[in-house]
Length: 213
Image 1: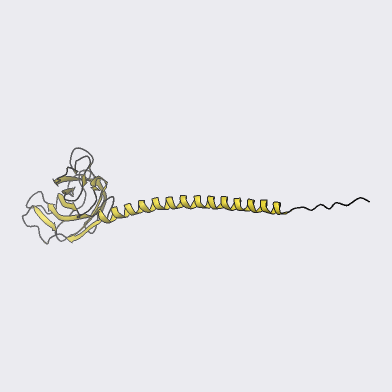
Image 2: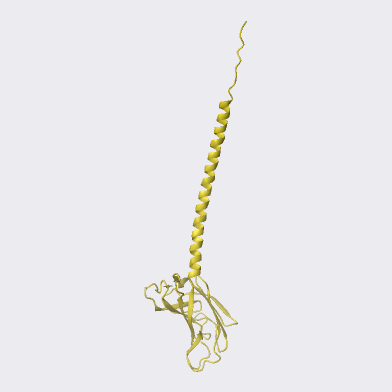
């Protein structure tokens, strides 16, 4: 009589391989997730640094308007031909590139905006541009080609506003006595400097009239 042999399957090995596959899959998923997190955190950090730098520039780059005077062509003239604005950066301010600044001026009934820096070499303001003249610049940061100012510098801006001149030669706006005067200096970075005042009740025979302060 033949003996019957009974064969037993050992399933422990199959279970072990399945567990190993699951473990490897979990490790791969964790590695991919970690890579995504590292990449995302790096991007967020870079954006945060950029935003922080821009915010610091916005806060620190402020212009201070020291004086504004109107200039008449003669003692009997009733309007200005030029307006001179003396400005300086606030203490601790970052460098300010005046070639990127925009100026707006209004007399209450007419607004002239988008006045830009005169990049030509003639040094004359017209109906679309303003010029900047250096008064104090100890570190030599200001030049006609690159009008950059920083702490300690002092310059004045000239606007040509003769209402009787050629339309292409000056800004067609007048500032007789008792007229509102509104000025905005908008730098590339930082807060806009805004001045609101009123021209004096009479100009008398003076050719230089103080408008601010």
